[in-house]
Length: 102
Image 1: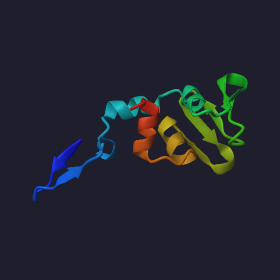
Image 2: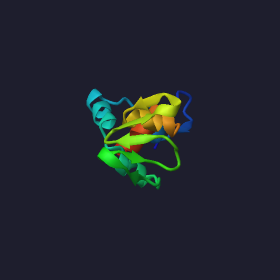
Image 3: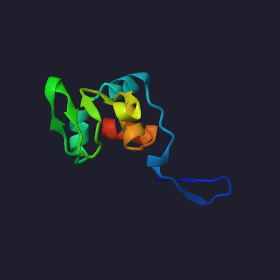
């Protein structure tokens, strides 16, 4: 993809770097995305525990259930987006891309 600047030179643009605006519905859906399949796609080992909880040996003390997680030792908790941002260190946009597959 390319465009022309005002002085006539060709400018190469990268569509993946465009400022993406996520809709409220996309954000709501991403918050509620089940974490276990997303983490398995990333190759993280996940161990089932009691009451539908899962632990991740790579993150001692972190507990995952459905689209929520908590890490009592670090006083952290949140939804699927928060996990990607706070635990995996992704930006909000990268987290949304990972969760939505776009």
